[in-house]
Length: 359
Image 1 (cartoon, rainbow, N blue to C red):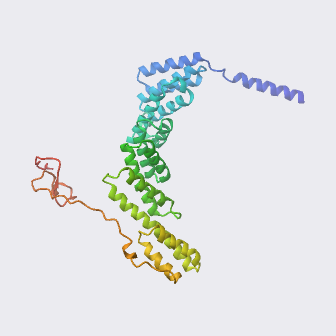
Image 2: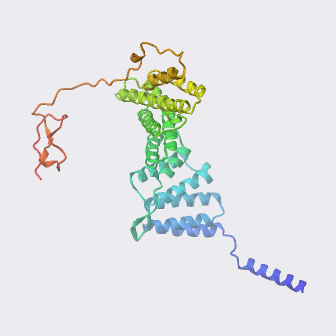
Image 3: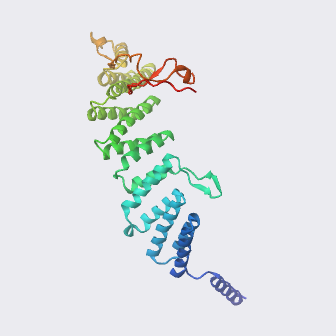
């Protein structure tokens, strides 16, 4: 019985292997490649790309596989299926790095990411053009930046990617790219915008609250770097005001911890926090409050007589310009503004008066 079962099993296994297809060879791949070329000449680009990908799957030869990927990427680009084209380019980089123009391939990845950033989405089904595939902007930018982090497009691309991460409520990823932009492209316009955006983002994170003042410390560092690197930029007054605001937030949190320990009767610990505010955040509103509480805890603590002059808030010096003359060119008048403006809007860059167009 055992012998008969073993023989039956061997026969079954043999039958299964006989039913399996034979290994594909390059002749079949070349035939599929030729079909793809024919379809591409007929401008049936989506179907042509499918044939090229089939040829890659069937081929044994590495060069033939690489040529099939290149052809498929070209056909997908003509079909405006940029996401599929990107997938082909990534396979070329990972599997055929020695046989491609790496700089050209990565440059194309950046351009594909830019198209997605502008709003492009691949069509899921050719006869239903209103059904789109998912947004792959961040994925493609990340891949391009990983492949060529210091390319000419990388600075602007990192700024765009950081903005997308901010919109997606992923501040840590945004902070990473803004820091990289400032570090990898010093002196560039992209680096200045990245430094300013980083300062703004960290200010928002500090205002939301971080228990250990981590974002606040990063914000102060970002403010100081910006003031040191761009001392003459028009944003300096805002940066100084924002820096003062964050310092006050930090002092307020530390003072609150000290006040809590005082309320719970742990005055030894409270004094440490309050003394930290007085020593390291003396030019803040909370310094005086901390000194008052220290004096209440320790009767021997003496408050400096001139402390009220210690905190000097930063004041922005606004420059007032002359009011435009009544004869200045008018771009839009109240009655043609859709109820948005109460007064005429004047074009300060033009010297010729232009009459408002009638609706």
